[in-house]
Every structure is written in structure tokens, then in C-alpha cells.
Amino acid sequence: FPVTIMARVNTQISLFTTLAIILSTLFFVLQLKLGVVGVILGQVAGSLFGLLYSLFYVIDTLLPQINFRYLKKMLKYSYPLVFSATGVILSQYVDRISLNYFLGIEEVGLYGVAFRTANTISLLFAGFSATLTPMIIVHYKKDETPAQIARIFGYFFSISILVILMLSLFSDLIMTYFVSSTYFKAIFVTPYILFSVVFNGAYIFAPGLNIA
Image (cartoon, rainbow, N blue to C red):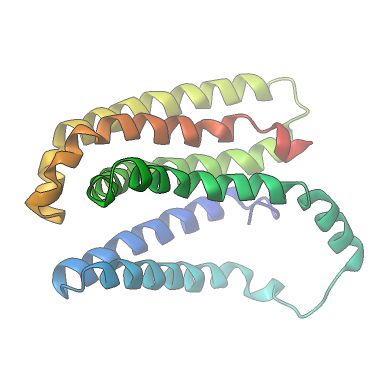
């Protein structure tokens, strides 16, 4: 969808998919009591709902054809991104591996709960990213674009601070409903992870690689 510059539709689909994953996960975990399996099933079910929803917008364009000229351009552009993507994947797991090596599996569990709680703020990124990236690709040559990006960043940062405060204040209440008392210590780690998630998600405001 960003390729076809359907920013509004992309935002709708991103938010719908995220909401579907959350609701599906809650259903499997809280209603059916499936535990970790319920989390996996919720992710799969929510993603499928998002896929079906997106098909309504692209069904007419799903034709079995290959444009080798564009394929060559895409491969040439995306090849350097393989190294970047590899780094991103490693960064998602190196923290848990390090904790397990230096501290133990119990700390990994506490960190996992805190991270999942803090990662709910990524809902905020979905809307901003889906709208901002296509806009930058289309309008990056215009003189007013940097000022617009700066203004949007101000909104993003302000909303992020409010969400961080809310999640930090009510993290104990959230964990009371979703995790056992064994993991309540995670509330002391959650605020720090919230800030790291926000700073990590702010990369969408540095679009140089997208327009290179």
C-alpha cells in the first residue's frame, strides 16, 4: 500500500490488523485459557483478519504477471537493506540472550512481560508510519516538507509522553489482569523499556534511506 501511496487505506489496515491481533489474543488467552499457545493463535488469527480486510482494496491488482524491469530495480534497491534487516532481527533477540547468559531465565521472563506491556505503545507507531512514509516519498522535494515532518514529530513525541505516563502509572493494574503475581516485579522495568521503544520507533522521522 505505501507503494501505491494509499496512505489512508494503509493506516486503516494497520490499525485494524493490530486491533484484531489484540482482541484475538485476549480471546484465546483469557476466554479459552490457552496460555502461550493462545498468544500464538491470536497473532495468526489477527494477521489473517488483516489480510482478508486488505484484499478488498487490492483484489483487482492481484494479477499473475512479473515486470522484470521493475523487479531488477527492486532487487538492486533492496539488496543493501538485507544487512539492515539482519541487524534489526538480531537487536530484537540479543537482549534476551544476554539476560539469560548473565542473569538467568527468571529475569528473561520478567523482561519479557515488561517488554510486552511496553510494546503496546507500538500501536502509536502504526498510524504515524503508515501515513508519514508515503507522504515523504511523494513530497520530499518540496520546501515545506521538513517543517511538516518536524510538526508531526512534535505531535508524535507529545502523544508518546502521555502514553508512557499512562502505562507507567497503570502498569500494575494491567499486569494484575494479564499475568500472575510471579511477574509483578516487571512493573519496575516497564517505564525504562517504554522510553527505549519510543526512541527505537522514532526512526520513521529519519527517512533518508527511503528516499535515497
